[in-house]
Length: 398
Ligand SMILES: *Cc1c(COP(=O)(O)O)cnc(C)c1O
Ligand code: SF4
Image (tube, rainbow, N blue to C red; front, side):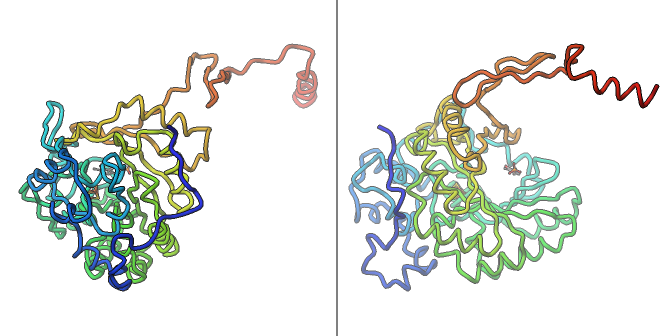
């Protein structure tokens, strides 16, 4: 059945937490303190399936469970296949290891000159400034690091990272990630951005964050002022399903935009969540309405215990093909595979080209019709429009 939604409304409100004063609900520290982190917390509000129950009990060994009350409201408690539920509530599959899965599937550790900094591309670095997130995604690429449930010994100390960037003039772009950089206090973030801005060779500073999605309350006017002060700061948020696009997220994106923060979105292609062209189309349309430009659609990394989320790459290509030409060009993310073992992001695209020779390129359009674009410059036959230019040439040059 095609996915449909009411495009005229945006989910909002306190949902299950009507009894909480609005001032608490809107306070991001209240949201963090009241996260659902234990089996009992979930079972107070919903009946888990045996698969989920086993997953929750296992989660403490892999990636901790945490869900903000705000985001928990988006879960359909009567539907085990709810796309938000799938992303947030662990399943037994997390305990199943497959041969091709890796703890550090992107080979980030080998490309780390100092702890918490990944220098894979010559001109830019990934700077992991914290190991905590507001909520934990069950398919997280860095589940080996974040939440510290695996005892991986990751302690972000950003002084070393800053010194590395300062001493490498070839680095012109830094991507702050983690964990979630927006969990740092305003004071720390202000300091960190100030230090980065002071590095003359650094041209581009961006933040990867799922905080606007899990904890829109964190996007305070004070935080926006800091981002504005050190701007331009670009930001990639992370939305996977149109249900996540609430009125609160929309308003948080507006505050960020008005502070001069250009917004992009990264989605991970996930089985049962967004592996469907109608869902993806609804998502990208919501994003545009929130001033967010879809940036990447990721093929899921080969993380341990992630097989139940894996989608066939051909399905991903089909989704991109269903978007290109069929909707606004701005709405279409670039589908990429982050090369296992550490080769960087590689674009994967539907193939529109049928044939390419020295003479022409033959290709199909979004409707499947065939077109040709000649690559040669064929002289026009004698006696036609050439006459005039030839005469002119003779007059000028005898
Ligand atoms: C994704 C990533 C970047 C940024 O890549 P862009 O394509 O520029 O967005 C940089 N470093 C690492 C290690 C990354 O994984
Ligand atoms: S927000 Fe990002 S880093 Fe944190 S758990 Fe989700 S995917 Fe991982």
